[in-house]
Image (cartoon, rainbow, N blue to C red; front, side):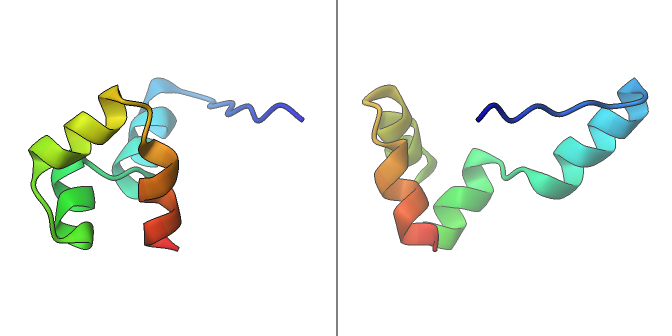
Length: 55
């Protein structure tokens, strides 16, 4: 299954990003760690473990 997002305008896309996605700072705050840890996890492909911790 392929997930696609279709926006009617650039403004709709910006609204989606602002309301639905987290910044690295927000993720770090939620997990109680530093942005550097989030960056390291991302670079090592460890985002799955981060995602599981958020559930």
